[in-house]
Length: 579
Image (cartoon, rainbow, N blue to C red):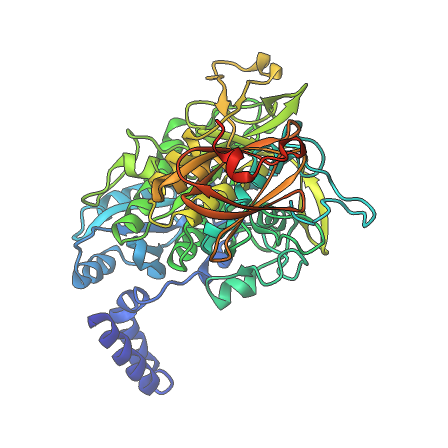
């Protein structure tokens, strides 16, 4: 209320004095500008950051020499904030109140000077953390009736037993089987911070929104962001292109990419993108970006102080949002190696990847480092090799990687209303984001930490290290689980409902539909052996198998049903009694 009153009176006084008495207006602005700027989230200052504002530590990482990041304590009063900001000086050019963050423009300083000013500011009333703003050469990291092809005369077949073709990433993750539970899925908001998005693409039109009109205005359509969005949520059953993983969704997007051909991007751009999509209601947040690919061959990973600075800032930001009542799950790509595409430790990919229990900075009560780690999934890239899943040769590794997903030759939307295959952990991360969104939409009572646990523990296949890792030096090389949509969704449903395990037998590649009295449908496909397993609640279902009406069956406990032609002349009720 105090902030609104100050905002109102400042607006009135400035309107009365700003034109006729510039000195008076300047004085009022000096007194109130800091307080006034706390009232709204602003991001227009981000586009004003240029390469000339960057001072370098190395060729690929540095800091913004005229900017400070100020995080306030959770119980800091309005006047504590105002007084401390006036002591700091400079100008407040942006704020994210829900993250307790203010961005202060200062005079240009070298690292020692700016660090000294941050240390001094950290002692002022109400300030939890004062820091330089890092800057890096970030980079983007690459059964429906949809044909999954450019050609209108061809439709991709489905074979989960032998994933191949343009839809192999959906086959490998058993996503089609997860779609069988679509009657349970509630609509969910998914956030993407990436390069720009083609909002009028046939498979994305009406799916993409932006948290503010300003963000919509600065969106610049790009291959990468559009490709990521398609993997997560492209329209299904529209007869064109592909099907994204979580179709009953709304995408809330922010284009983080630098403007005017800048090479550098301040982490503050990612902070604001993160905060805006969370405030707009996004639950699963996809970050297919990182900076490991900019590291030269001479550097296997960032210096420890840079990694720890990232961990400190991003953990503080996450903790503030959690403290303010938001819940979410962050999914970040592990990175595609260094500039020579040789894998390095994923902690060197920046943003959320370096956070661990030791370097997390959490000045807010009731939030622990584990709370943050439990809401971050770092994703490596998997491919197929001789019928087995192996890690992509350039995919970053180490203990910080949680899981792998298909990330090679992933067919999805791109600009100019087209489609193409791209590869990289950037493609693997949205596979996990889409599946996490299915899980959360199947059981909205879950927390972000619950969703991560379900995703990472309900898997079937293992992704082995690639043979190319022979050149890796002092890296933690190990196998990772492959994300599985069917098992994850079933775990979410078991967590919410009393479910029964059902085994179905029919002819190979047969569609079997279970219908309830309330018109809900559960659609599954038998595999090459003519069988599948699913979960159903107790009750009576009408069954159509291979287009034939099999009448009604009753599910009451774990059951086995045989709907193959050789099951006749048994009735479905008789078949249900057989184990």
